[in-house]
Length: 344
Length: 108
Image (cartoon, rainbow over all chains, first blue to last red; front, side, top):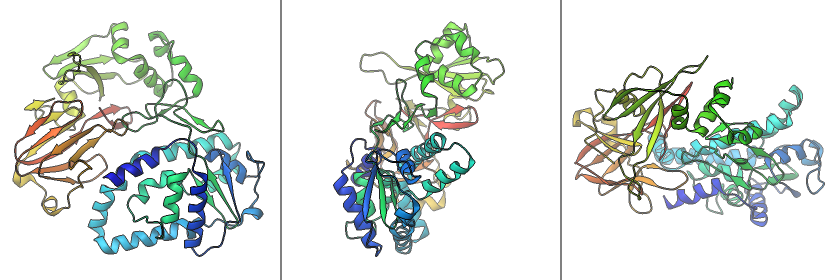
């Protein structure tokens, strides 16, 4: 578990890379794969900038790369092959079921949240760099060549990553830097993000700026995991119920509702509770041209340090008829079965 | 059935325990020797079991999980009062929230 905590920290690390350690890790990974390269290491400030540099746009140090300069991708030799070999070794040692248990105990949970981040970064790079079908294909292919550096933490956590081992180099890069691209003659490697804001569930989440940001201005905005345009967030501070009702995009309207506060919106829209029992209160709010918002209002059983009880709202399926049914649904069980003997 | 915040522990009759679970390996304990039922990704606050027992992850990252506490146990959390569990088997369920088109896990 201490080991997992350290990989968790690696995956979420922000701030300047340890360039010396990252370059040493990259060279170690090449050597372990029986390669002599790379002849040089080029730094980029974000995955977006790395892809730009690889498409021939000069980066911060003026370096632009062409396929002739970099040579072919050696990701298969440097990362994929040692990885597959380590996985096979673990499979043989633990058996299929043992491996499955091992993966669940190590990387599975961390990958679940890291994967979302990785997907968002990829989508952001494609969205911001692709100006046609041809460039889009090019960008996507370059993204496939990327090793994920710190975002490989979940996978690395499942294996032995001792420095002399086959994955020692990859683990060193992961602890020191962001994404990297190993090619025959050149390796391109990224700085880590400068900003990373997530909510308790690990989703990208920030109301007053980019939830993920890199030094070169590559930014992604999200509210509780939902991708939103940057300018949309600025508008959130001045919302009113009419503006929310008038929003035609259901996803953005949901963000607005969450930001504004369902409770406040319910109060100001004159919504009425439709059912009340000992588990809580059920509210229904009709939205024009969209499914109803149905929520259970629940009081936290454990008082806060100041003695008050926190009230919170959970959205439940629109078919919900009673508060008990709603609360039971949040735990995936039937209303008549939901009977906690004790709750805190 | 016991509830601590966003985690529900539903007691299971011994004959309802899946046979595969009885011999399945237990989840490892954390640095403080606890079985972690749910971990807050950002605060690090955990719903955790103190005492002897085994936690078996069935499928999926968020469970469900099976918990076996042969002598009973205490479930602790940084922000919720502790809960005493009588000895036996439990299914551990994380709370979820409805999102049109999908479902997401609640975290407290």
